[in-house]
Length: 322
Image (tube, rainbow, N blue to C red; front, side):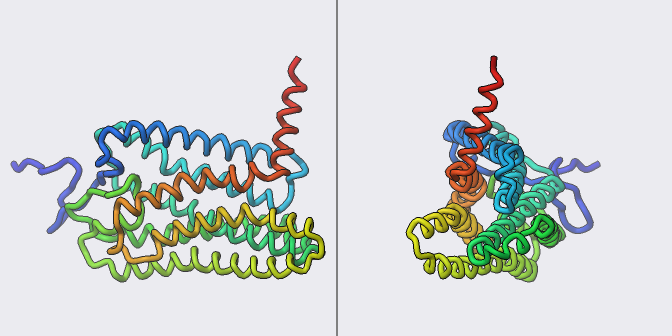
């Protein structure tokens, strides 16, 4: 009777099939991992509390029941689930010696991560269109962004995001994976996983690249067109105060768009062969942690309407105390 070589592999026909992956993460940093755990845990709690505050305030305050804040609430909800898919497992791995993840769990993690990430990209595009409709066509805004239209756009973002994710995950995990199972990342991302496949992946990578263009370049192009139209309209406003107010409603959205699309494009709009682990891991930390942190802080908590709603909610809680 022969003894199995490893418990994490099963033999199938002429090659060894991977049953689980090893997430290397930040293992090369040694004792620094404990400090990273504290920092990332703090940031994760800030992300959760910030997004929970935004979602609650938008739901409770009637003055924020507008299309712009409707999409902001959905973005905050999506960002919360987006970080939940990645960060808890990463935090556990920072304190653990065994950093394994099963083949199935790896596929599920990639599916939900990409699903929420692509949904966020599409939502940012829709939010750009909302600003365009509000500033460039104020008289038609109630029709262009009716609640029925908003609901359909939000549903389209979610369905489109997870359909695109399902396509990519099928392409990646239908590949044969042989003996190599070390994922040089802290979660199951496309490039680190597909590099472990023991076959030519050129066709799969090309299709994934096309998907990346559709979900990154196309929405970003539409956002750019929207803001060119917005800029042209703002320049026609005679008063300086009117221009400042119009710019202020767009500045936060643009900040998040530049960081989100910039980091995502750097990672996903290039061949897998160009993947450089340490540099790419730093960029990935930016869009898995920093961007979700920026959304409630930059896009919402600095917004005067949201600040007023938070103060109002805190004032009501204070008035209820005996």
